[in-house]
Length: 307
Image (cartoon, rainbow, N blue to C red):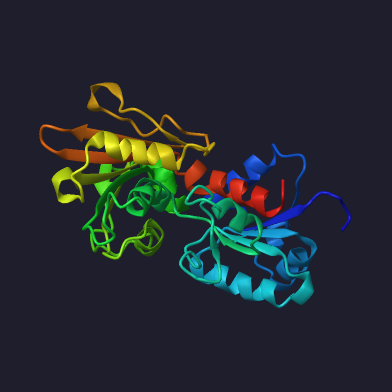
């Protein structure tokens, strides 16, 4: 290598996530970022050659293109770099490590030792962050019929949606994926530890970035009929050593806005409970471009490169 610094190539650096990763890497002088001229970014030979020079390649590509890039990198044999895939293509692939370091004890170590890591989706980061600790503790059964509602800033929809909102204003709010086939459901179910496929209803608001993910629960339908405080305490114990995940008290007034964590790599979890009605809502707040995308990617590559 020409430099003692570990080197990173972003395959697909012109997209929303790629640009976000590039901006974050600019603040890390211990990493050398490799890049191709725009005219060569679709050139297979040029991409293969720069992959051979890199210690780690981040794939910010559509799913099919990401699979092709994995094949291209795999053909390099001993010169193949580590791979971090920001697409959906490999998130439930058992040969890939899921890149949510706080998901369970030891997961950060698994990521650090992996050669292929799948960066999580933004919505699943919130949903898994809320549900996995409660499933692991037995407070929520694996076969509980979970419903997940979420709202994201329009930047999560990619360049076309961003341009539509920036240019035309876009709708104030809209539900989507009402065919109940959103591509984030498989990873949410798998890594939350659910045996029953959750119902997931996402939405987009007319704000650029920020996200809320919420899960309503009937407390008396859960084993042991827990109180809201029991759910809060279980989450707090699970994440007590996590730097980027915080369990916080409910916001005053029963309101929560989605943009407070923008431009951070943090995830906030809270439990809103009405004990008289025996109902609760779990809520996760994050930046869909931060902990939900490029921030998580930089966290993962730092682990993979031993920084």
